[in-house]
Length: 214
Ligand code: HEC
Image 1 (cartoon, rainbow, N blue to C red):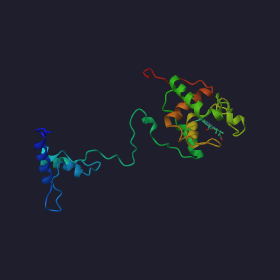
Image 2: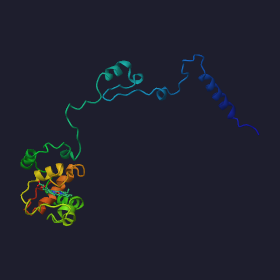
Image 3: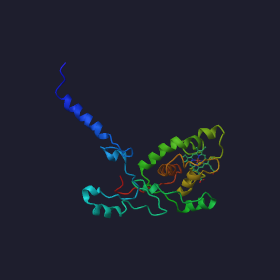
Image 4: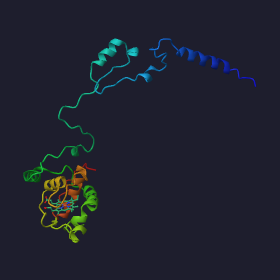
């Protein structure tokens, strides 16, 4: 069979490359066709390596190299961004009786009391709290009824005037036979549930909905 015409130049080219790769010096890496792939640059965070001097001149690249590419976060700060930034800070009150009282006096919800928030809270309450507190918050959930946990207070009587800061404190650390829910509920979820509990307390909850709230 006759070989296609293209074959000879291709074979010659391949052989020339193979020979070109061979060098006598044992320490030489030979011809590197894509050096970037052999020796990838060791990039450090917060260091600007500048643009490639090949394209922008060494002088310009050197001046770039001396300026940091990103600012380091200020020491002791906690970065948080986005819509949920009100919920990104660590809890400020200690797990002590004084911390509980202080939270009750000072801590207020970053959420607005809207129908939407109350409904979202009701859903979470149904998933996380009814087994003890009962659907209506009377302290008569299934676990209370079968006698495993006793003394669950009724929101509408004993806890009628419990401030929201204390509710949050209890969700954070737990209280008595109720465990901490800090690892099970995000900060926002905790405040959503509290919006719902405020309706179970039976007090007239004033809507804090503002006109431009959607
Ligand atoms: C295992 C049962 C159990 C579960 C689950 C539970 N609780 Fe409780 N909760 C209790 C008990 C018991 C108390 C009474 C604690 C005390 O005062 O000693 C209590 C007390 C409370 C109080 C009053 C705290 C205070 O400051 O006096 C609030 C508010 C509360 N729970 C909210 C919730 C919410 C919200 C959930 C769901 C995320 C929940 N609980 C889940 C058992 C439970």
